[in-house]
Length: 276
Image 1 (tube, rainbow, N blue to C red):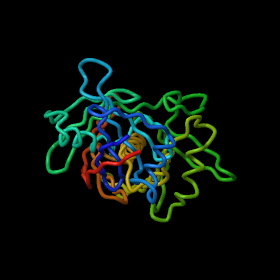
Image 2 (tube, one colour):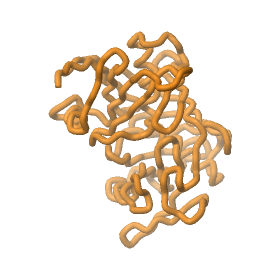
Image 3 (tube, one colour):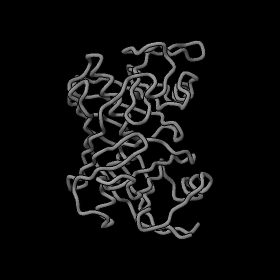
Image 4 (cartoon, helix red, strand yellow):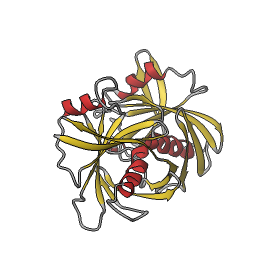
């Protein structure tokens, strides 16, 4: 089986993007792991698969696989690359499209000059939506971690996030604490662990340890989750620039009941063909 693909990234969060509309694509978890291997394959944080929509009125279906072969619900940086890819590939001439994901419909818009804006939908905070094991919904939760404890906010952006505030994100123990939070038994399906440093009311620094991928240079849904948690706790304004290790992204949220809007870059690195 030969597959044509594009290698793309959003702020260094990198993807292998495959057209499943004009190609017959069926990949096993083992094949995805092989493709994702940075020495033996293409190398990526996530594989993005473009498919025809299942329901009339939508433009595409969007499937996301981590480089460990597991399928996940959502990827914010990937959604920006998605809308650039389908335009560049001639699959649509629309600037704004509606896309089915495993956890709902998103609406990415290509702005030109390598920038895209995405309506990421309304964030959800009920523990059952992540899922997270808790007796009742709260603004924050205390999570015990091997003799220590951390205070987290939780939010579903189509995928689950646990966000903690730190004084200095550069020295935060992301590699140590990230897997403990991500695999904590109170998160039955695991969780993405965010570490947020607040610089001022309009700027934060962020690192995210993603389930199934480890720490990435940027995480779009993680940026959304961090800003939402910061706004809910009164630390941030409605428009925030998020500084990730791979670059900057702008997140806007008007509050409860409103969607989160994400604006940032999408970059095509190269196109290729690989035989499996």
